[in-house]
Image (cartoon, rainbow, N blue to C red; front, side, top):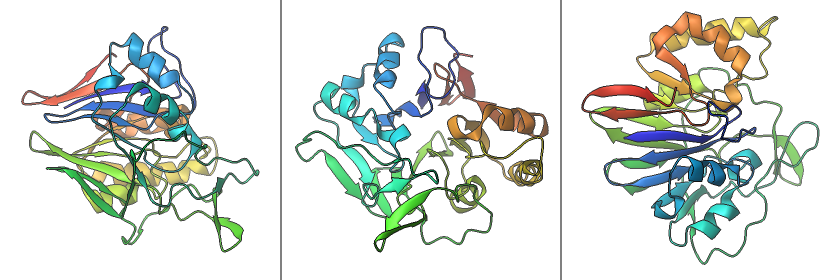
Length: 273
């Protein structure tokens, strides 16, 4: 498996754009996958600079119904004329931030049946599954309580039932790809038991100089107790990552745009650092 971070909040390469968002390119033994599209067409420009042909992508996945993961979808549909796009059936509901900003998916062009609405579990291929874990008990706190969904004629705290995780099996390891982990990164690790996890932790609003340190310390303790090697980005927050890194060492890495990883028979290694 090869993974390349096309776009996130930071860039490791002066040629590449950065923006608040996420887009990841994946190659498995059988598939070429685009996971999220950032908030603009910057992911596509970066892919071109990195020599990644988005026209060859077999399928695309949107992790959840927010603009910073879906804003480039129209550009992808224009570039690629065949790949289906898997989006949870609730992702097109209205979503807002606490300050009233619309953070939902923007209107899409006609896509001729290429948008496939997923359920709580959707098998994409042998060893390739989308899961929401919506029925799972959440033993750990999440840190997305300020985000809203429209339900019963009013906006209420989002339950993030529209968020899904890409699960695959590669070279004897369970790999999980998450977008923002709004249901709680520790809950996702508890539900899915990955050996390798790529995605945001949504710790960016935890104050590393104040009360947020208590939550980060708890998270570090729980992360250290599970076997997963985590490659994080985007909504984790760089300050929060820097706080966690000394506590987790080689179990935690940051992937900025242009970086990635390879998982093969030789093991796991980072690229583009």
